[in-house]
Image 1 (cartoon, rainbow, N blue to C red):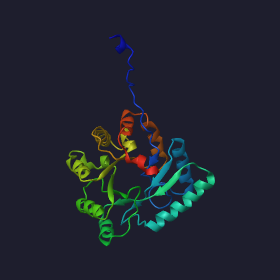
Image 2 (cartoon, helix red, strand yellow):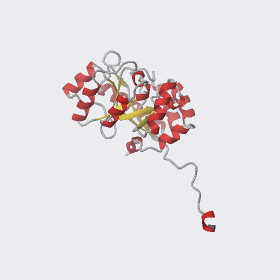
Image 3 (tube, one colour):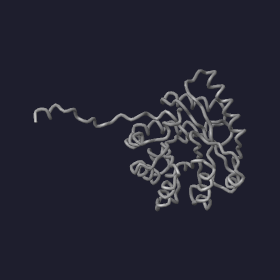
Image 4 (tube, rainbow, N blue to C red):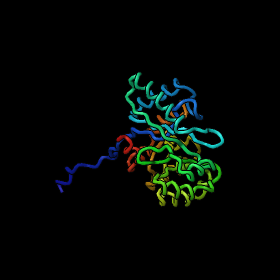
Length: 247
């Protein structure tokens, strides 16, 4: 009885590793709806450094009808931005992949077995229409996996067709599709339903990656608020694959 009085009480908040790698952003300048020029890119990268990030993997849009980015275009921008960052002495590593839109042109790439820009352990980030489920999603997931890629669905909490029925979303996760939640969803930045789904995915431990999806200053302003939320701390307690990307 007396000994029990001196037992160490459990801390109400357990230590979790801080998020130091971002794997979804639009900081490469002039090739999609993100940063317009190198000055904007550097300004945002400096703020990521202030927030404690050690690595940024930038993922410009690849969309058949709008952003016809190729690996050559993306990697050329990465090389130029990396040179500027090194010359400025900023303590951060840069990488690049892509955010592929699930459209006919993407399916053609898969059918032709064209090389895709991936990150980490051959992870490929993809998105769909926010309003309508893609008719290609099941085939695309199968083909990606057949080619040795690991599909990552960007911001699943933002797709309105999951708002009333998340069954398909959980089925995709069970089939090996990694889910990447946007951090700003935890602040209700996109919508209340998006916030609720993001919280549920975290509570159910279905989240593999957290991303900023940063396009500009507005996203980093909200991100600073997110870091004080309970669900941000809960998310950091998951076995996030972000932490594997520093190697």
